[in-house]
Image (tube, rainbow, N blue to C red):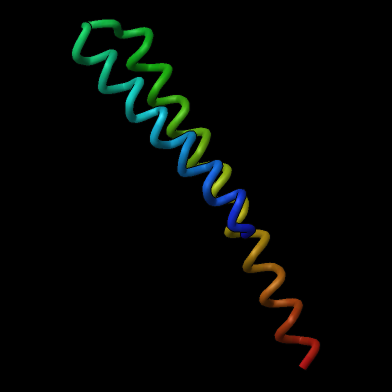
Length: 64
């Protein structure tokens, strides 16, 4: 996983947490759920990047 991708996903996750917290504090359920969705999306992206990394590691192991 590239450094830039990791940072983008982390920013998306952090923004999602902020939205969720703001939604809870202001009793705005829509914003709270939007934040949770942003966090889930960032986590899925991170998981996909980990799968790509793992596949690359397996490919490299067979080259040796």
